[in-house]
Length: 238
Image (tube, rainbow, N blue to C red):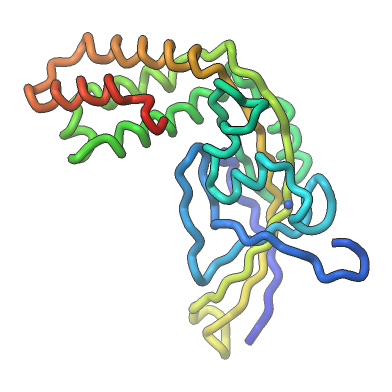
């Protein structure tokens, strides 16, 4: 079996003590922001091998650990974030300096909207029994556009943190001569930016956006019922 080592430059997306075997945290492949995670492919596993706090993945801040285990709710339950929503911007690639610059330039006022959109969209989708366009009609995309273009001046940039992750996978590709099962190891850096905003503030803004979207659509009777229901329950589990 061949062992190849490669460094991939991925587009912006929105880490042991001496004498001891390094302890590693196995994390899902490409976790996304908010509460929703893509769980690990059994043939492709990323692990944290270094971070801002040193070698290995055992000295991560609690919020970083919770992020990589898909528990944004646990971050929001921390005392320091009482009555605040938490969003995490994430960027990854091989150019550490470019990632650091991205994190330093991350602006809650300008960049938070896309993170909020993700959570809003997920809430609308999980609250629907049909495809969103069928469930809500034009209301769905109007809400998404409203949030995407929204300003959130009360948001606060709390922390930044970087990790280096390593991926081991099994490739079944005829391009590799000989053994078709080729183990590939690749590396990438990731920068995380933690942003928070007051629950009452964000809820007030989103309620206004939702109401504005509702006022300019002409839903069917079933769609109107679905819209009314999601308006009443929107922040349950948000």
